[in-house]
Length: 247
Image (tube, rainbow, N blue to C red; front, side, top):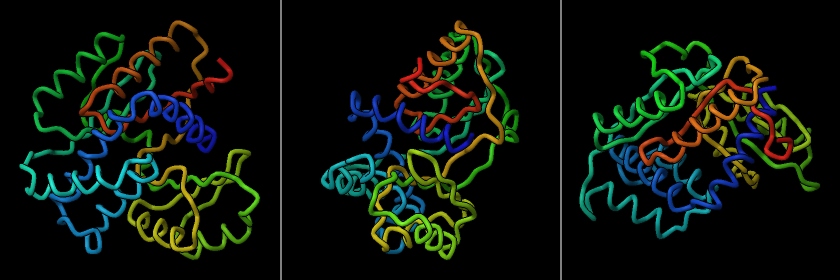
């Protein structure tokens, strides 16, 4: 179920990314800024920066944009101070939501996020209010194609330190501990595997079905508004949303 949800979320976001790629690049640029601030501008010695660059490339972010973001974060093109914040709350129907935010103005972002929850029938909670419903882990998605040998991929992933490899019609979902994510990603990258997605994030322990159409509409509207906010880098939830093709 978790694997199905992850692939569904990727397909859902892919369509949005095609329509609003500039906004995606803005969000990734902020993640680059945070990585540079924490570990410096050299990806050879900054593992977090290498991870974000890989994420940028998987989203087709041009190298010029990546380099510009690194230079800006290192002060060469002016300096903006960002901070990372995690918000937790509930969408309609008791659906748990976690947000990863990178912002240069904590008060503005808190006000914006609270307004989005309130406007759409949700509730912004306290730290820890829904976190226990999720695991923080690394997830790598590799699309299925004829050139991939399933047994070989599984062996390479597990030898690199992955905890599990799940297969589906769409492809392969490789699960890692958050602390092992970088090593596994880089090992598979060196083997020549192409990633649909590779990142750390929150994955729900169990998904909740939403059977009421009106509630589903409210949940989708809240999630879309959060996604559209420039400060919100990632949105996670435990709703078992139908694929767009099935709606």
